Amino acid sequence: MINITNIVNEFFKAGVNVRPYAVEILQDLSEEFEIIVFTASHSCYANRVLDYLDPKNEYIHHRLFRDNCVVTSDGAYVKDLRIFANRDIKDVAIVDNACYSFGYQIENGVPIIPFYHNKNDEELKHLKNYLMKFKDHDIRELNKETFKLHLYAESEDYKDIINKMFPEE
Image 1 (cartoon, rainbow, N blue to C red):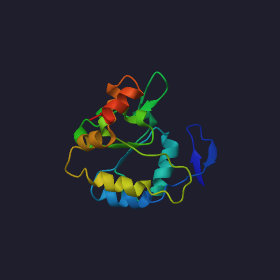
Image 2: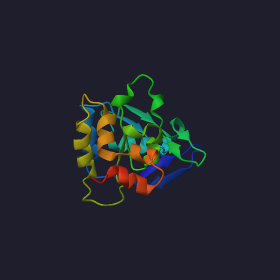
Image 3: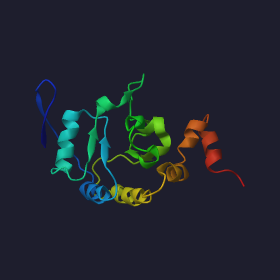
């Protein structure tokens, strides 16, 4: 359990459910990439979790929180990559289990399944292998080919998407 203090100095305890291989992937990927955690969580909570995962600040280079997101009229928090004005967008990936989080730059998004309590979860191993393919490449091209998320934005309904993804020959 982690003690967390919110803005009005109320204390509460929150459990942290760490996905298997989380620390290992941070270690490995930080050797090849700049890691920026961009979360829709409040900083008072997220900082505690990130300090737990990276207590010596060796792997996570920057942290962005809910107040760095764009809030839609529906109340969704979207991570707009234009915040990184000094980085080439072709080199930036957003990994998230909520695809709307990368809705402004859909081709930079890498969807990941949510994690709850599966101790045998190996999603981060697969993620690491996938992300390593981006070294010295435009992330958007491989994402477009792999996930085809652009088809959702270009389609009117699910039947149109299926026809575009699996055209009859």
